[in-house]
Amino acid sequence: MKFWRTCLLALIALGLGAYIYVVERPRIAEESGPDFVLEVEVPLVSALKLRYPGEPEIELERNGGEWRIRRPIDFPADNDVVEGLLRQIAETKAERRIKTADAEPLATYGLDGDGKQARVSITMGGGEHLPDLIVGQTTPVDYSAFARVEGRDEIVVAPLLLHTGVKKSVFDLRDKQMFDVDPTHVTAMEIGVGERTVRIERRGDDWMMVTPLQTPADPDQARALLSSLNAVRALEFYDAPVDGGDGTDSPETTFRATIGDGQQVGFRVGRAVEGPSPGYYLRRDGDGQLVKIDRSIQVQFDKDRSALRDKRLFKCTDSDIAEVRFDRADGAGFAIKKSAAEWVLLPPPGDGTVRQSVAQRIVVGLATLAGNEVASESAETTDQLAVFGLDSPAVEVEVFSQDGSSCGRAAAAIIGADSPSPAHYVKRTDSGLVTTLPAYLYSRLDMRRDDLIAARTDEPTKAPAP
Image (cartoon, rainbow, N blue to C red; front, side, top):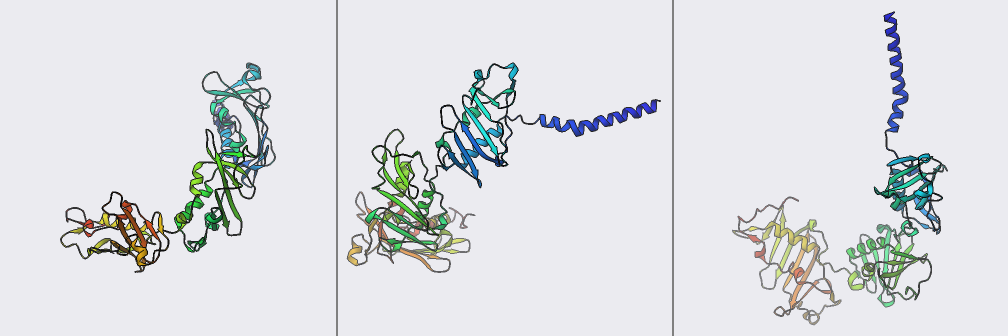
């Protein structure tokens, strides 16, 4: 009898254990998980409606991964803002739940009707409509807010972040990036108005200015323009004419980029917008959308031919430079040359050693050296060069790449060296373009042999590890 009783109890215990493991364990695990206010799978959401007291309803729709506002306007939406709003809703956890029978009337919490703060309607990809989320007023204490899910017999106390984050204006939801252009697909750019128009065209990896003159264009300036184009963001939208006009009919600044397939994108900058948040009016080509932009955009696109032409003195990267020759008018010329892992001085420094850090700084500085303001576009004759002291330059510097080809030769001179404000000029010897240089940049060319020589105890001869 005792044996059968023991077996029976063991079977009951095993059955109870199996029941707990198969049935109760998942339920307990589920109930002990995060207590979300509303279960939302954000990637599967296809549509969203936002209703705020006294304001037009906002409808958004996802199409192919991109969100678009459908009401009260038809306009691309800011994907990051919409997705952020949905994630915030999906990740909001209940701090406390109050059964309706134990609560005051819904109006007490601002949860009657569409709610004091917002009503959010979410539609999933298969057409399923989730219960509306209604957000009411804030709690008197504890930095929380009241909310409810329609159809559920309870009131939820949620973090205050839900209350503040769920309120979005049409401006908040609009895509404020005015242009989205792949820079590698742009084949040409035009800047300016009338006679001030400058056109540059892509030629392989380089850019060429074709209007108003034929000359290489500055690739760094071209890249900066394309980067600035995609950075243009609206500070305010205008869907109706503005008082006093926007000035885009007679703009001071225009920009147009041609894409590889022949498509063109661009804009016109009009008059300044005054007030506590100043800026400029900008009208986008194509759809004519008028917006306000930051004042810095006007500066970024206010480029003339002087700013856009290529004023680099040496056309190679610092890693490609193998030799630099300094020919000085005072007869103290020298050269530095890469030998294995270090720079050597020619002629050799005698008892001293080559300061590797200085040699490397010289190479890096020359690789990025470019003229400043254009002083002359066609200084070729001796008389023309003499105006800038370049008929007998103080120094000429030539840079060579690893394959032995020249990256360029530049001549530099100073006018008024003994005056309080001397002028520094420089030009590539194969061009008539003369530009100014600030004194600190001129010093990159006006190097002396002794600048690279140190006593043997000063520093090691090996170049520092990269």
